Image (cartoon, rainbow, N blue to C red; front, side):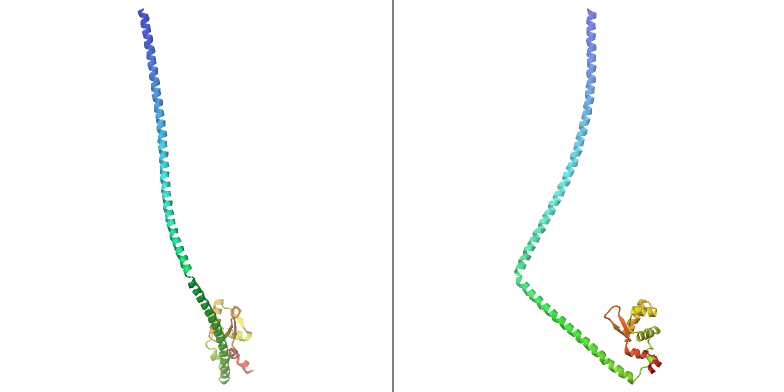
Length: 237
């Protein structure tokens, strides 16, 4: 009887020990699972916190931009209000200045009439000056002819201030007739600039005449220069 009781007690103790060990094992596993679940939850919470922080920063930036846009809109509205006031003032001024505009139009018409009169007077003066110049040229041509007949000018003295090239250009024009500067350049073998300066000098010093109706200008020798440029044997004939 005692052995049977002892066996039962031993079995109960063994079962209890096994149950306790199994419970302890499950308890440790549950604790481990809890720790893992708590870590996952903390990671999720931390991730949510970070995301909330970023969203909060975005909202702050958006709020700052909205505030800046609102301030700019207020400034624009203020400027538009000032412009509207100026436009209203200008419209009122324009409406009250109708008579001034009419007076200004009359004044402009008077100025235009005076301008036309001035232009007409200038054209008349220009025509008169041209007539006087033509008369002066005709008048100056007469004494030169009589002076030449009375006191002949020696060829060497008249051409003493000219270079050999200049004399050659004068003789060429006297013999061949009017020519342009490019045509003269080909004859005298000079550069375009040198030829232009030479012809300008001869014209300004009164040795040549110049036709300006077309470009390039045509140069021709004066009648008195043609007589001076004749060789003595030609003058004798």
